[in-house]
Length: 163
Image (cartoon, rainbow, N blue to C red):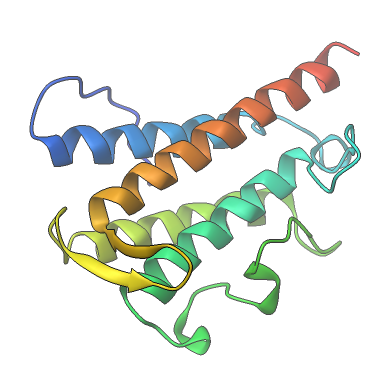
């Protein structure tokens, strides 16, 4: 079952609106790959490693890095799906299906929600290279990240569906 909420919340607490917007962007990213064949999900239409499936793989890594590693301070061995590939790559192995990668992203998103629920929006931690960041900043950064990649996915999908 899809764990990402798609209900639109336009009024409410700041936290409810931010978390809903993040979930909507998570779902938008997943929607860019729904119905694609395994071949089309891996089609390289740009010079980089960016493919429809790799966008989701990258997003799952971002979830783990920011929530499991940074906020929860989990060891790599405690992170679901973590590998040394999480550090900025879009590589998807041949044995990973599109359904597997969607499920990985949904699992990571669910765990991110659970971890974020432990903190207040104004809670902060020091992050090397970024300085002191709040949970609010992290959630907004993930909104930005996933919205950008959903846009990439929309363009790739348009190229696949209408060559």
